[in-house]
Length: 226
Image 1 (cartoon, rainbow, N blue to C red):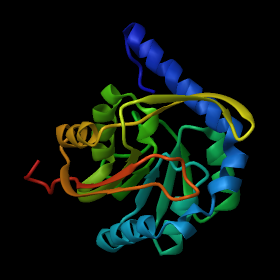
Image 2 (cartoon, one colour):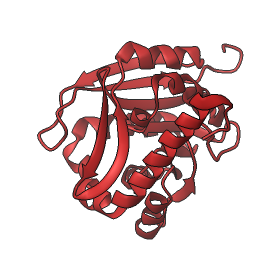
Image 3 (cartoon, one colour):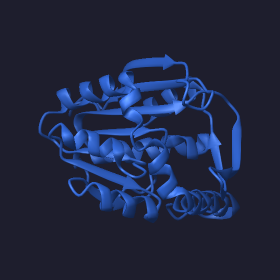
């Protein structure tokens, strides 16, 4: 969380701390429950494969990587994958299981990466823990770490409500899930300087929570076009 002045900044910092503590609590169970989820998600695999194909040899960041299963899938396809997560327990779980992936601890609003370090990035259901007002700053930060022409794939739950979870797989937690409107996210991406290339909506799979999901594929403009 970046430093901010005022009560709203304090509140947002508290939100991020609640997210971190909640994911620390469920880290091992999380991997046990969804560590192999891509096996049952052909559409996700297709989108990730397209991202890999267009990125070439450049490293790819998995932002909000959790225990690292998506980053590991990318690494299996020859990608230099870097996973970033707010939860130290998630980062530790990823390092134990996927030594081929580099893991870093960090916040979406202050990514632990240099300018233009990555050729592409994915943010699959990580922006659901951001308030709508935080989307643009997060996407500005994502653009910073992408090379010109680099792609970003964002996935999120569609809606307008906030769901607070206090029990997660038998663990006591305190975390908010923000459902976002498609135009809210798309608009924040445009304001951050991205160019939208594709959007896709789908219903939930039987093993998933009953929400409608959206994928937005955007591109960092080439130099001279931003």
